[in-house]
Image (tube, rainbow, N blue to C red; front, side, top):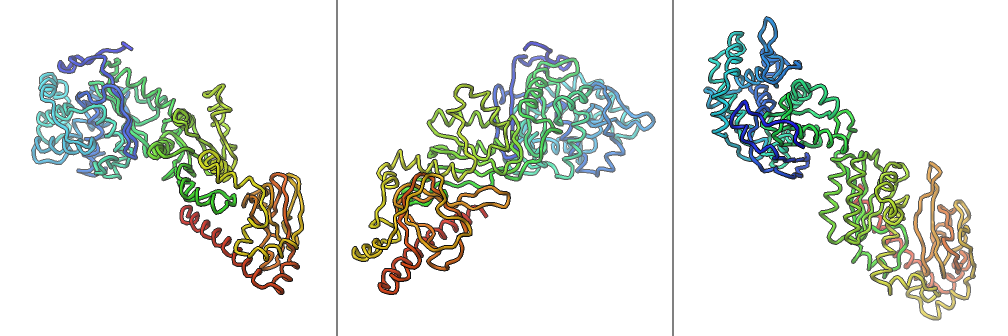
Length: 593
């Protein structure tokens, strides 16, 4: 793009390479993204104005500043002599007249002290020690006749109460402070972060004045383009004739752009176009940004810390404790926009090395905009290239995500876009994949038909004792989908699963079904009936064709009377199983609450 021209009315600015371009985006979390000539030095020029205005507010009071400096947009050029009729008060602090008035209100016994205070404060915003570009300062001073004239007019109306020439000199110096694009991004992000530099965590301006600074930036920061800027791009911003622009999205991020070619208004041509594109592509418009949660990541855990509701054998549970860290689950909350999705993506990439499976649970997400969808798409491609699987759960409420992925993934959509309705089902699937691919010998045990000798509740019984119990077992078969136990039914028997898989569920208040557990061969269910005889509290369905051995409560009591050791062993094993479930629940409670 070759539109626009480098500023020439200050001779030193004319030396800039018109093709320089840098972009820096800094989040309130302190992450910095930069591209191009982001470390190329240039002078801050009028971008200094909102920061010096903030100093004037701090060093005086808002009421005192308003007596000498208005906040109304003018629609005039940056160097217009725009003073209120009668009072001589500059219309706002973003035009030169207002900026010179603001410089005069900065605390300091001498103009040198005033400039040093400005320099120190801007350095706090940038997170490093800034310096004066002497050559640009001399060029500014030698050609600054109009600004000196403005200073004399301000003195005439007592807006300035000291000789105007030294204050004009302070203004020349503040405009000649050397920065780069990265500095601008950090300065903008500091305003976005309530006045605290998100990298150094040092306070550059008191939080109560940030809103005043951002307000005048929003209405006046882009001079006679301010209205269209706010309408189209929608972020408080400020430009400078060296080619810099800062833009602020409060609470989320700051943007710094550098490109020397200017339009007739004195704004960077490429800077405006890039901000326009960023605002549209990342949904950064101030009035199109939903409230974001303090943390989009509600909780993160691994498959080693929390298992699915599927009941695992002792061997499977041991393997998952040791190797389940390769499964990572993120439960998310709030709204997913660029800034919140970026936090998530960054956290995933920090933990990606030992990850094979990533589950993103969207159940508590209120909304997902297109920029967040775009970040998810890029993350999916990155993980896929590393042969890592990304799974979404709870996507039914977010059809926009599915549409976006389908458009982007095209023919690979069905293969790449993996979804489950509930994260528990996704976690179980990942556990099975991990066991099947890396520990096939353990997984094979799950598929084998169980005999009474391998039933978990029978462990510790002597062979003759197992035979005594086996003689009382009744074999029963069920087809897939058939009900084995009905909620509310009388509890009169215990089921020992010999072959196939069964699933226990409860009905929720909204009519939906919540899965409590999946049972594999060798496991038992319905055994609580041995303790209290209360009605069934859950429904158990055959997930596949199953075969069960059933022990009635009557036979159990009879065995207890004639062979009390059998009853003691069964009850002990039952207690151990309940203890394992309790420990699992405790682990989950410590993570989720």
